[in-house]
Structure formats: C-alpha cells, structure tokens
Image (cartoon, rainbow, N blue to C red):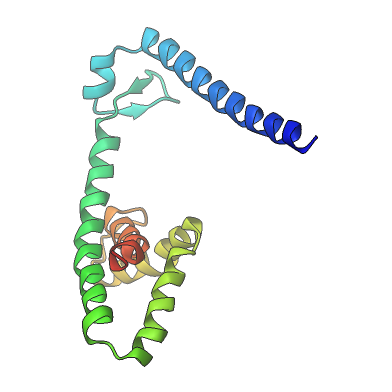
Length: 155
C-alpha cells in the first residue's frame, strides 16, 4: 500500500514537471510566432503592456549583468577574506561566533534582503550620492553581494 502511494506521488511530481515543460514550450512557440527572435534578442525596449508592444530583452540582460558583476565585486573580496580569516587566523572562540553568524545570512529570505535594500542601503547611498534613485543597480549589487557572501566564504 505504501509503495503504491509513493509511486503515485512520484508520478504526480513527474507529470507536474512535464506539464510545466509542455506549457513553457507551447507558450514560447506562440510568443515567437508574434515576435521575431532577432527583435527579441537585439531590441532595446521592454514594454509588453503599452502600445506598440516591444519585447527587447537587451536592457534586461544588461541590467542582470551589471548587478551580477557588481555583486561579484562586493562578494568575492569579502567572501575570500572571510574564509581566509576564519580558517587561518581566527581563534576557535571567534570562529565559533562568526561562522554561525555568516551561515545565518544564507537562511534569510530574499524578500527580506530586498526590503533591506530599499529601506537601508538605498537611503545610505542617497546620503552619499544625492541624485541616486530609489531603484538602482548599486543597491541591488551590494545586497546580492551580501546574499552570496556565505556561499563564497564557505568554499
């Protein structure tokens, strides 16, 4: 009886996954019947809700790369430095406090990081650079860098 129930659960998860893949493939084909692949990859405007509807993904890709590179600039030196300090220089007592504190960062939900970026990091950046807008890549890069810090420090 248990084996049948487990098999049914496994088949349900496989069927759900296959259903998601089928919907994604179907919707992708329908999308690219309306929008050319060249326009999608090289377009510089993403306005799917306004006329004329445009689906250029270039600004989204460049924004993603900007935040990814910025977060790497923040996280790699801090993460490698933390790892070296914790493994080579920190006493057992300091390591016993800092390592769990660093691991706790990995458990914080991303929505909390986003809220922290909006309510703490952005106002701080606006004090340093007054013309900084509320939604900016610098805040995102700093907070994403802090988010990936535990992973880099644990390597």
